[in-house]
Amino acid sequence: MKYLSLTKDELRSEIASLSAQIEAFKAQRLNLTMARGIPCAEQLDLSMGMNDVLASREDFFTADGRDCRTYVATLFDGVPELRRLFAEVFEVPEEYILIGGNSSLNMIYDTMARIMLFGLPGGDGPWFGKKVKFLCPAPGYDRHFKILETLGIEMITVNMLADGPDMDVVEEAVKDPDVRGLICVPKYSNPTGVVFSDEVVRRLAAMKTAAPDFRIIWDNAYAIHYVYEEQHLANIFELCREYGTEDRVFYFSSTSKITFPGNGVAFMAMSPANTKWMMPALKTQSIGPDKLNQLRHVKFFGTAEKMMEHMGLHAQIMRRRFDVVNEVFSQGLAPYGIGEWGNPKGGYFFSLNLPDGTAKKTFELCGQLGVVLTDVGATYPYGVDPRDCNLRIAPTFPKPEELRKAMEVLCVCARLAYAEKLLAE
Image 1 (spheres, one colour):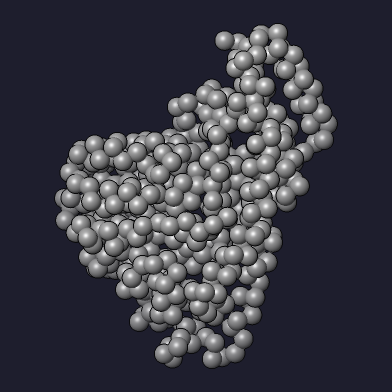
Image 2 (cartoon, helix red, strand yellow):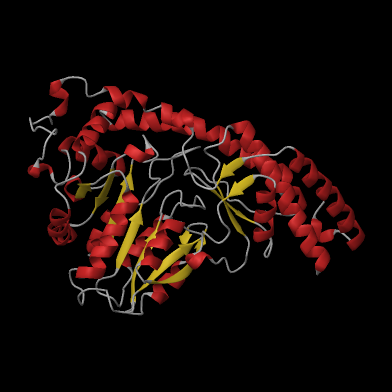
C-alpha cells in the first residue's frame, strides 16, 4: 500500500487507523531513550577483565622497565607497547601515533583550538581573526559541527553519497583559499554507516587546494566496529605520501566503544612535520595522560588478533539490534513507500531518511509516546536539515525487545506524519 497511490478518502481512513495505534501506544507509558550511541551493558561486560590486569608490582612497568606509576617524561607520546598495538590494528605508522586521554573528541577540539591560536606549518599564521571555512559531509556527526561552530568556523554542507562526500563539490570548494579543511568519519560514518570508497580517499589525498594549510580531520572512530562484515577503507596516509600531501591529515580514533567509554584510550596520528608542530603545545599543556590506563589496555588485549576477537564479540551483540531495525523498517516503512536507511554494515547508527517535511513531526510524535531520538537537524551543520527528512537511529543501548517496540512506534509515527502531509497537499 504505497501512500502516494492512495485517494484522499483512503488517506483519511489510514490516518484514523494510525491515530488509534498512537493512542494504544500512549496507554503503554513507554520510556525508551535512543538519543546517543551508547554501548549496552552486555558490551561493557566484555571488558570487565581489564580491571584485574594490573595485579602485581611488575605490571605497572613498561616492557623496557619504565615505571608508569609516576611522571614519565620519556613516555609523553604513550606507552610503546600500546603504540605498536594501535599501529597494527589501525594500520598507521607507529612513529606517527600520539596517545592521549580517554576522548578523541577532546583531542580534535584541542587540535583545532591550537590551529586557531598558532596556525600550521606552511600556512599564513593563526586562523583566529581570519575567515575560515570547513567542509562538512552531512548527514554527519553533531559533535564535529559543534566544535567548528564554537570556534567560529563557517561550515559548508557537502552531501554524503553512498561512497562518501560528493567529491565534485569538495574539489570545487577547495579552490577557495578560505576553505581550510574537511571533517569526517570515513568508515561506518556517523550516522549513515557509509564507508568512503577507494576513489574518494584517493581524491581527498590528491586534490589541489588553494589553502596551503588545508587539513582533513580524519575521525576514524569506528575503524574496527564492524557489525556484519569487515569493510575495506583505503589507507589515507599511504595515498597522501604518494601525492606528497601527508601533512594534510590529522587521524583520530579511540577505544571508547571498544572497552569503557569513560575510561578508554584515544590517539591521534600525524606526519612528522605535524608532530614537530604539535609537541611544544602538548608539553606545555600536560605532563601526559593516564599511562596506567594505557598499560591496562595493552595487557588486556595483548595482540592485534585478540583485539579483533574482542570486536567480534561486540559484533554479535550489535548484530541482534541491527537485525531488529532492518526487520521492523522493512515491515513497517518500506511497504508504504516510506524510508531509506542504507543497511549499514558497521558502526553505531542508522540514518533514516523519511519523506521531505516529515522528520520533525515524526520526532515530536515519538517524543509524545516516550521514545526519545536524537534531535532533528543534529546531523547537519547549525542543526538545520534543509529537507526536514533525516533521523539518526541509535539502536545499541536498548534491549532487543525494547528496541523493537521503539522502532514499531517510530514506524507508526512516520506513517502518520507522511499521510497527514499528503492529505494536506
